[in-house]
Length: 473
Ligand code: DOR
Ligand code: ZN
Image 1 (tube, rainbow, N blue to C red):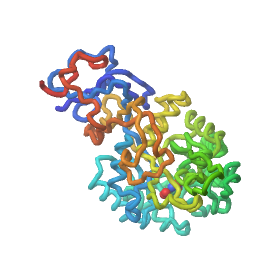
Image 2: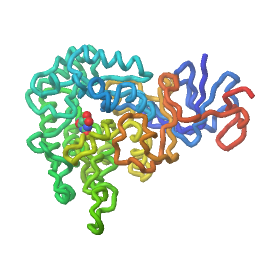
Image 3: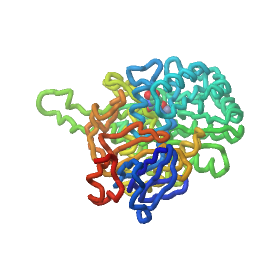
Image 4: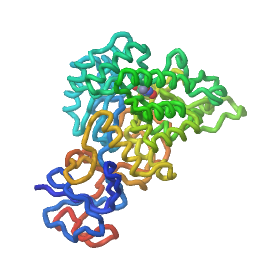
């Protein structure tokens, strides 16, 4: 029997809505007990191993239902192996890769191949999403039942919308048979074609063509109407506008089977970020193009960063449950993909390793409670792609994440395991870091020597209670 005690952390169980400071007792890779620190025994016996989690949060492993692993076809941006490495370093124990690979994941054999490649590398769950249409071309429905039988956990043409309403309707009808959601990237192409960033004052000032909120909302409204009529399972990917949140809220109130996700960047950044953080060229002295700061192409993302009012509405939607899940939309790109004019830059942010520190800014500014936040990273997404249980109570698997909310670190290319270094946060100091990720009792990521406690410290420093040691000395 193996016995591991995670000591003195703040254990968050989103299923029970509890936060308990104390010890998490794991036995044979299963949670045996959560013990409040005031009730913790002075000894757990000689056989127990310890992880000191004082000052840290201990939560179920994060679940990311929207990510891009780029294999096959774009291995220069990311591979399944490097993506998994970045995911565990971001605290994720289940990830759902989107099918915009080349070839696209539009057949049972392509879905099976994802499982095969992932199994070679993965200590975590990799649950692929299949396409809605063949080749993601939007013209012919993919074999959805076959894809689901091969293990697709949802359907999406992500990167592009399912623009044909009839095909969307058919896909929703199939979702009633497969039980898997249709996850639409909502943008009306006639409104957003060629658009570079959010429509508004900053787009106007930069002379970039604007992407109106209605470009997203028109399709959300259409899809809700189709889901309501068919009874199908609709999931709205990366909602970004106040109007979109309102549409989803009222649809849910009517009982429509609709769920939604939001990304860490849309929750924490506005279109002002597009301007970059360089000082504008004052026009004096010799012309130096490197001082021209028209924009930062690393902020280009689809859908685009929106206004401050939108961000406020997204946070409100996340808090009241209109938005079920946070999904990273981890979209790794190469340097070259971003080193171009704004409208030509590949859209997307590297996501896994920055998600938690970005989101902790919301907790630190008291915009969301940490238990609620963890629920949207675990329980919410689990319900959408059907992975249960997600809890840290007796009998639950020891699949968990430990993060330190107060560690600070600087975003550098070397600090990120993902091949994608594309983030406007490069060079910035972040607060909060994943320290350890455990999958069914196995440590799949441990930062430095996190939590290792020697017998010498036994009974010593604050927070290191009796019985904490990892080795005989
Ligand atoms: O910004 C984005 N990047 N949005 C998408 O929908 C696709 C993604 C990608 O694949 O790079
Ligand atoms: Zn998308």
